[in-house]
Image (cartoon, rainbow, N blue to C red; front, side, top):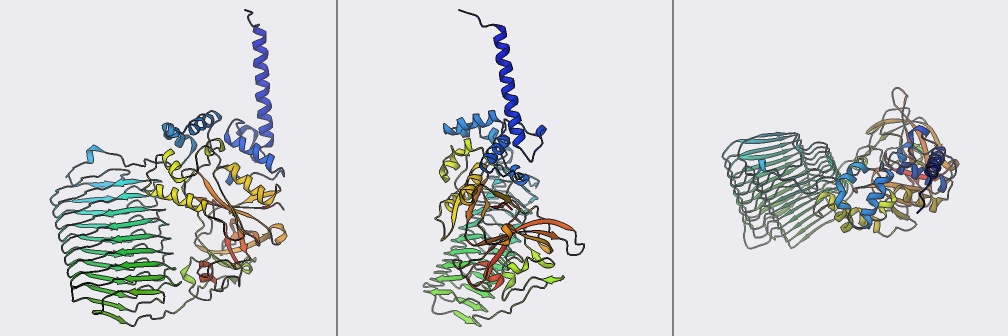
Length: 639
């Protein structure tokens, strides 16, 4: 057999080296926003830029906000994980993929820490995270546990407090600033404090500013005796998510519970109270300033207090100044004895919600005292409520309206009614985008967790279904993250509205493809530069209308909550797109550069849309503008 000449090996190596240099040169020459020395031609970022240049050959710079979201995986890692995804075995190397790919991953099943199990030593838990406190404090006598700044600033904290303080006597628990600023927070308090005697539990500033909290209090304090519980500033300023109180205080004796400033200024928080206080004796519950200033709070009270004895419930200033909201009271206090409930200043939502009272106070036991004093709501249904012991005093009071005052050279037009029901500045009119106008800026911060796209070679091999994504990433369906995945998939599969073209993009290439498909290949992607000016007054500087300020088409893309970046991209007809310098009101210094889109045709929008609450008017009567938030984007024709 002939032996290859060493010169042949040398020539092959030289040819390979020249080929690599050629590939590197082509990649670097097309990377207009990145220096030649900074681009590795074999990364996903370099591949995306080459793809972008082929699809959009207009030589516009590739903006850093978009390029920074591209996967940091190397070519070798991309090939390895792509093969695993194709074989359905991605979970075998999941920790490595999450770390190298900059994904939103976590320990989706709470870890077991043997040192915490069945411990009875009173402790202070500060800066703990992702722990399992099952059976902790069981049978404890006296003492106190303090959870201060527990699980702060985590993406996916999962904590389990199953059977915590069960059968304890005089044991106190304090949860202060628990899981603040978390992203996808799951906490399980099953049988917490059950059969305990005396003592107290306090949840203060729990889950504040969390994104998609999922909290479960199942059989919490069931069969307990005289153990008090308070929820103060619970889940304030949280976004989406749900809380479940199933069998809370069931068969308890003299259990006082207070919910003060619960869920205030939250966005679409759902709370379920099923069999809450069932068969309890002398239970006292107080809901003060519950759900105030919230956006679409949804609360379900099913069999709440049923079969109880001498229970007392107070709903004061409940859902005050909220936007819409729906509450359902089914079989509330049914077959209870001597139930005492008061709804005072309940339901003063600025944009009318709905309340349903079905089977309220019904049953054979007498002595109910249920009053609706100052209850506000046209869209309320009372079906099958008790025929005695129920009074409606000053039902449907009216509220006064106010207007927002902003100081400055010019003022954005005030809302016709109920301005404060929607965050100031979230919606505005096209005339407000004029140099010299002072207007409020909403919170435009990117509150989503930091993640990257997956390379298309990997993303395309993961079926876009909730069960498949949950399986691939080891996510339990009954967790906050599992529910977020299911919600994202459901929204992506929703049929488009009239005139809408939509697609969920699971890779950077998918985003570019959709934009080019809708708008053509001479397009530019834009986003608001930063979060500068958020939640304060701003001064509008120079304004530029895209496409000469004419009616145009655009593709807007909004982040969805998923382990990797997924954008909900859609195009709607009849819009104008603007860029504007955002200035400090006092110094006139430039603090941001914003992108805004104005929808000229609102005829298909719901009459309850927050834009009409904030601005007045009806569908089809007015145009509605809003900022493109940090982290989102809009594609439009190049200028």
